[in-house]
Image (cartoon, rainbow, N blue to C red; front, side, top):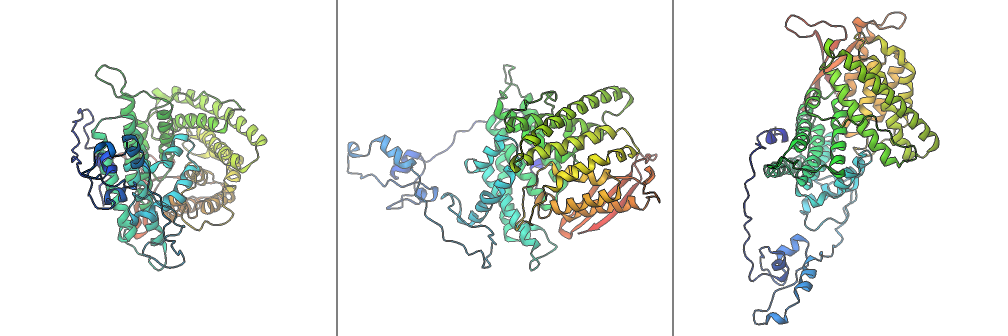
Length: 552
């Protein structure tokens, strides 16, 4: 198993001042005009050099040694020529109906000239599908812009190519003719993914050694986001936790960093705030998911915006409304993680917890009133998706805040209508036809909502409907398509159903919650652990646990 980004980043002594080194460049004296102006070494191949050809520049040719400098092109003209990109030529079309070493499912278009030809299928998959899927639910404008400019940052380039290659490796592993119990790296695409992945990790580490700057934050957070998705594809949930915690630590260090004068190292402008908000949203929502276990670490290091009372105007642009919701949702998510981790539910903190709970519920009701009014006014599909997500999330959070102090979980039974309303919204996100390719388009909010409904709603018919919606909604969705997740929820339902009485009621002694999972994706196995909601800790401090092996 390769070293994870977290293991690399933990080696960094961030307080150590960066060592400045002067870049070494060979002096160019007889190279082509383009390489001279670019101040790079020319291989001097004639009539046009190989360096320009590989870099996508138009080679301006070589100077005549006998000619006078005055007869040369003016510097401005030569510079203009050197910066002019080489005209891109159409690539040979790939027949996707014929088998090939790399099963390219999407049409190949023009690829940047500086990209290695063997990486073209992965670039095209990222550009044509993955980037579109991700930006469909990235509410932050910054993240959309960042993902659209991947080819301007070498670290993000390698991370994006690694993600696309790993996705193709997953598709190959699901092919009945190639199905194997080995790791994804046994496939050619998996090897390519590993190579780019390790290169991106190395670049992230090198940049952090140079100190925390705006460019460092931008590059590392975007790469961290992609690293986490790569690990999810491989089923390495504990590694995903570590990666996201490291990204959260980076944000914290950037906020706290001070210059020698005592002033903040970074000025947190709107762009940095959007970077933080978008990353926090993904981190917190994954932290609230029962299949990730980094809640305690994330809660400890994450920072609150303290802006949960901000409400947008009803006539504000949808982007502004979503930005305000994200800030509120992040604050609320941190509070929910804190009470789930048991950090605040103690006698000395109870009064504060109840006060915060009341404030959040009041604010959630204001948000639901706003969203209902907007849904009544705006009936287009493009507006329903983001507003529907907000409404379903608000309903879920309201149920949780109303019931989390009840250890027996019986109070959740009073919210059947809210659970049905959540499922009604989720059903509208089920695609009309199954996707042909593995997708990244499912919003990160949806999975915690769907899994929460399955685990906390004990009405038998509603639970079965929730499982059906979960199955249909997550079908061929890469981040949530693992059958182990679905089977673990089904086992929880079956486990509790055994204790259901003749009236359909499940007593507290037969109610369980999901506490952990041990994954072995290579063997398609998982060990799920459940604990009764009213269990008392033993003398050693452990809780009686029901462990169920799952094959998928």
